[in-house]
Structures are given as C-alpha cells and as structure tokens.
Image (tube, rainbow, N blue to C red; front, side, top):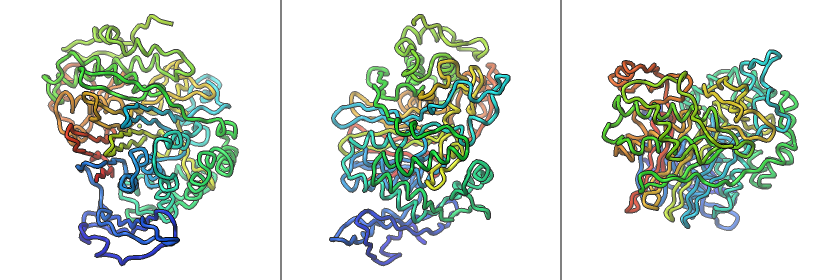
Length: 598
C-alpha cells in the first residue's frame, strides 16, 4: 500500500446509522514493519437519522514527528489519540475540546499510561488571558495509614506500594476531565465517542505496544481477579487488534451520566467489588467524595521576556522548575554551549540542589505548610548556589536541603487552537500499567500512585526519589508528583506548550528543553530529540541516554561525577507558536508519539 493513497482509492463510500462521530478503521502493515497505516473513516455529516461517511485522505497515516500549520495542533503519545483531538478542532472545538478527546482516546489506545483510573494535572492559557491549573491528582483512600507498607520491624515491604490493589489511590482523571469541560465548546458525547468506538471495535497495536503487553503478561495474570483484555496466551504481535468491551461500557456510562457514571452507580460498584476481592482500600465514600481542584497557577518570569506558567503543588515541578531556572538565570548558560561539560556540570548541580529541597520540604500543601515563596525566591536560590563549584562535582552526602527560616509511566499531550487557547496536560498511572490491576467488568487499569508517598522517610520509591515527613501517607492526602505541564509566554503571547512523562526525570527534562530553546537557540526538533541527562540528588548519579556524547561523560567523570547510561529519558511533546502565528508541533522520537496540525 502506498501511504499517500486516499481512502477513496482504497474503500468505497459507506453509510452508518449512528447519530455521532464513528471511527471505522482498517490496518495494513507498511513496508517498514515498525509502522502501521491506520485508515480511519469518520462519519461527520448527519442527514436525518443517517450519517454519511466523508472520505478524508489526511487520515491515512503513520506517526508524524514534526508538522507545521496555522490553525491548531495536537501532539500526544499515540497517533489515534492525536487524530481524535485534531478532529475536534476541525469540528469547531477549541484546544480544551481537543485535549479532552485526546485524553479519552489515550485511555484506550495507550493503556500503559493513558487512563481513567489514574490522575494528573492540567495547565491552560485561554485566549481571554486567563491562566488555569487543575489538580486531578489521585488521593490516598480514607482507610490509608502512614505505616501501611511497613512490616512489624518498621521496614518497607518490597513491592507492596507498587503492585496490586493496595497500591491504588482514588482515581482523579474523570473528575479532572469534567472540571475543565466547562471551558470546552462541543457536546461531551462528541468528545468521548472516538474513545468508545476504539474500545468497542478495537485498534491495531504497534510493535512497541505488543512488546510492552508481552512484558507484563505475568503481572496481568498475577494481580487480577478476572482475566483482563490485555492477556493473550499466545503472545501479542504488531498488528493484533486490541478490543476492550468492558472499557467501552464504562465510557458509555461516563458519556451518559457524566462524572457520576464513574464515581457512583455501576462503575463505583465494580471498583469497590474489585477492591474487596483484592483486599484494596478504595470504598464508595472515597469515590463519591473525590473532586478535582482548581489551583492558583505557579507563574514566574525568566529574563524579563519570558513568563512560565506551570503546575503548583502537589506537583513538585511548580517549585523545582522556577528554582532551577532562577539558579542559572545569571550564569550566561548560552555561552557554555549545548551539552558541553561546562553547561552539563552547571545544570546537574542545579538539579542536585533542587531535588535535595524536594526531599525535605515538598508535599500536599492542603495538609502541610510548604515554604513556597522562600524556596523560589532569588535570595534563597542565590544562597543555594554558594554550594556550586565550577571545577568539581558536588556530593549529595554533603549537600542537603537549604535552611528555611519560617514556620517514570506518565503520558503528556499538548493542544493549541487558532483562537490562542493553549492546553498542557500530564496524566499518569505512575508505573507502566499502574498497579497492573484491571477493574473486573469495567475494563480499566488502576494506578499505583500510593508509591509516590514516602512509605518511610529516607527510603526511596520505585523512581529512587527520597521523601520525608512532608510527603507521608495520610487519608485524603494527594501524593507528591513530578508532573510538570508547562506553558511559556514570550512578551505576553503564547510561545511554547510542553511537557513529558518520565517519573522524577520529568522536571529536569522540561528544564533542559526550555534551556535548549531559550538559551541555546536550538530548533524544537533538536530540543526534543537530542540526548538528555538527569540528576535527582539521590542516588548521586548523573544518568545519561545512550547516545549522550562520550567525550562529555569522560570530562564529567574526571570532575568527580558518577555517570551511568540508561534507556530513554522521557518523551517530550512541544508546540511552538511564532510571533507571526505559525504553529510547529514536535513529537518525541522515543516512542510512537504523533503530532497533528491543520
């Protein structure tokens, strides 16, 4: 098949009887086996009770990594989700409509991180100048307790906060979607229908998805009371169709009943019954009382021309990002050059200092007092930078949190529309496929976000992040997060919409991407795709991607750093808007990520 063929060349016109957008798609392996051509037939023109199929050649595609346009853009972790989002823009929706459709589609086509059983954060800059941040982070169930993952000797029980029913926090994704639906334009049924059809009829999985599903087969069998759709005894392969009938039923309840279709009624019953079977903690009261929360945005300037809008606590990014950017603001970073030993040394030490503060001070500000203003103030960051030596590596066993004198799986997507609305959302199950438990009869995976609490002060979680009393478990408390959805204004106008998954590497990746574009003058594609590095105080290691320059790692080791190669760091998605109104969207090379424009 020629990927440039139109639908008219491949299949005849057909007619459907559903009075809503319908996705019918066929799949065919392209010459390169790592790509698939997905042909999506959208029924978009209603004629009475019948809906005639409109052929759109732009829907014969594989993953696009770099696109430009003027009317709007969507970039996400999966082509089918990006297509769902861009279709809403073409239907007259705004960036919020596109974000909701994308998020719901990701819950179907990207089960490792896309979800309705997890949570996340939304940052938006609306065309009217309003800055919106919505917290739909998961919460600890009412039955949770500070020492729930410790044994009789007060030692952390390995894996207890990571796998199975007890690892799940109260999901927030559905509440989040409805909390920002008020900023959308289209009927909700239109926004959720692509996700319903993808779940009901199935979609062809990619080679990467097949590999991920196969890797987790034993966990799916071990941590589920009923066999989920993700189990296939013969093993998954690229091109197989993943059908999720139970998930489609759950999505229909959400379509018809709104948030109550998830937090009450049949879906709530299925969640609670699943908890009983697996000795989990989520109860009816937890679900009914959950609400997303609109928070005051973290807004700060960088070198006068740039205004950064990001997520406040319980996102640690809302503290670490301004800290790190202010630590380098007066250091002439651009003169050092991209990924030289000098620039990497400076940025690594800045990351070390910020993450030391994260471990000591940060948690849910609804439960504890966090010295936010001090932590991001110029006097404080200047004092912290007195620990910096330009000639040698710092030592995390010496460098601790500053003195305050006062009382990895996620998925990110961005949308932008021609009116100037920007939306940046990061959502998560925490680890890949969350706690590996699917709610029986409801078809969706639950998160394992309880691991993001400090099970015991000083003991690292699955990402190696160390926390203290500030992030201890408490009923109803939101666990600290690294998710850092971000929007940048240049002289008051939208400039960048960005974010990434990646656990504790999220904030450092956003920081590095911003420095690459603002300080080093790099193209968006290079800023997204060039190798990244990461340091988080403990463990005292500089992690680098495998294609990171060996000459630079050698110089860093001579300065006293311990450098370790690792797999991909994050999957950064960026939309850039030029002063003339041109829109550029870039999807990360590290996955099946896709950028769509029109």
